[in-house]
Length: 157
Image (cartoon, rainbow, N blue to C red; front, side, top):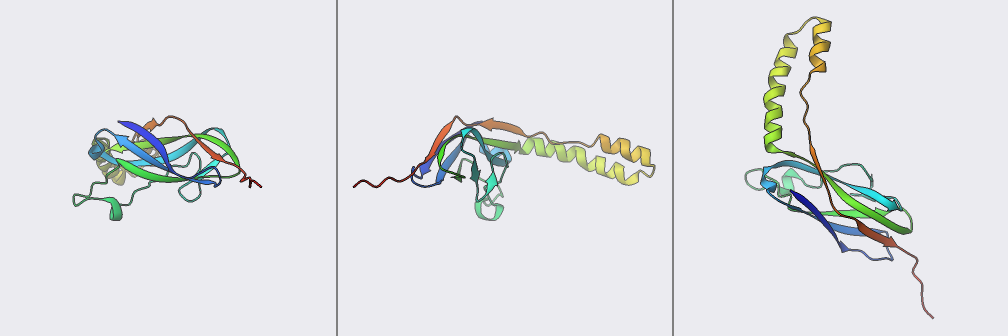
């Protein structure tokens, strides 16, 4: 899968820009994607109405974006990015995703793990069992760099 982003709205006279994020590949196999903004250089930014750079958000809603089978289309997402002060920001969009296959594998491991945990009574056995709790391993992908600018408006006489 690949991740691409492009600015679709905004200008140098405002702090806010809208970026369209496109996922290419088989997005029907995805359980979820979370997005964040990484500042490569320059002025810090927020996204999604105030989340800090590096904070992952889910930009889709099950109620709004799912089809009749409950699948969410992740092929296109809009993200609002706001510079926290005037200047230039070089950013890239990062995605964290889990496929339905990985989630199903996790569920097949966690359910028997939880059942076993419920039967344990010895504190040492419980601690040892908790140390071996199954985990889910998301995958990551990143766009190329985008340059955002917010400068002073200079009126010409």
